[in-house]
Image (cartoon, rainbow, N blue to C red):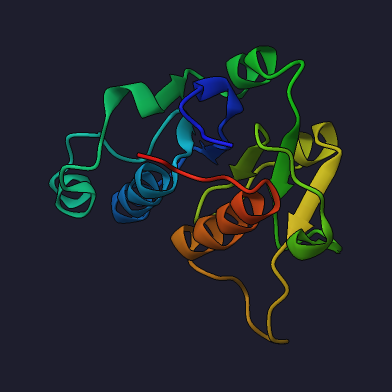
Length: 160
């Protein structure tokens, strides 16, 4: 399977990201692995921020990033799509979940995750198991781990 069709690509959605370097690293990961990036605003920085630009380098393509004005617009657009929330509060591991190629993988803010109201709206919640007494991985690392599993399960091949 190739992923030239934008509808048959994994989507990484970031809820109000607040660290430009992390968002830029995630955008690079998406560019290299063939996923689309979706940002639910407001962002804690501007896309022209020099810290963002330093990490994203020349990997940013306008067509691979979509902005939503807020969570309501995001859920309206995704009404018939499957959203998976990655959270340290989940009980199910990402590695035991059956991903679909066009899933939207939602990650919360680095500083606060997502609000409880969003947790309640999403059926599928997954975590990355970690050593006890550790809070969380860096969001860019988390995106790479879970996106790679989605691609592996779906035999996603880039013939770029």
